[in-house]
Length: 248
Image (cartoon, one colour):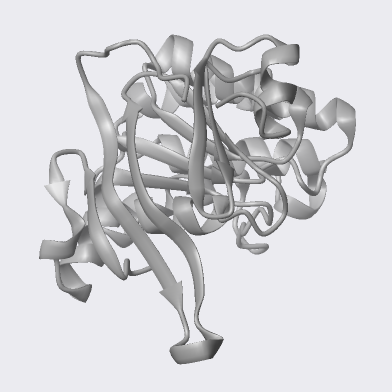
């Protein structure tokens, strides 16, 4: 296995992470004892064939799915030690989410959608942070528009701003360009890249697209529920080989 260089800070980690669905002969082992460290302040892509377990891995790391065995630590907290209420609160305060579906409320403007998580948690809006996020994502002239008045790429940038404005320790993005054309995809991925470079964010993205992974610093490759490569700044040939199972 190719490993990343040693980092001084880890945003999320897994040890012996196992996720099994069902029981007995019908049981499906989606994740098989994964050990993984995701560095802070970097853009990591998780890739693998359909059914490899990449989305399950992200969901377990994000506290959206319970693990069968092993541990998951995010921002220094062991998620297994949190009950449902504490886990919900932890996700709200420490984790940002961006999904393939934009999940914007249609009756709210872009600006109102961005600050909604803060309002729901009773936290004040940090105007400096808000203005910084809006500037990095290039949506300053769209804040008064409803989602129906925005393109798909603009809606996804609003969704990213909503995830970033709370200043989470880590942002998980699950196929964030899946509903976008190639031009809008490149635009959104470029802005995710800027959020890492200019805002110091940690982004972990599940994708099946080589073009999307090219924006990442690190690429985790998963096959049949096991991590088979963890690459740092890979070239396309190296990444293609790892995806084909030749990179271990």
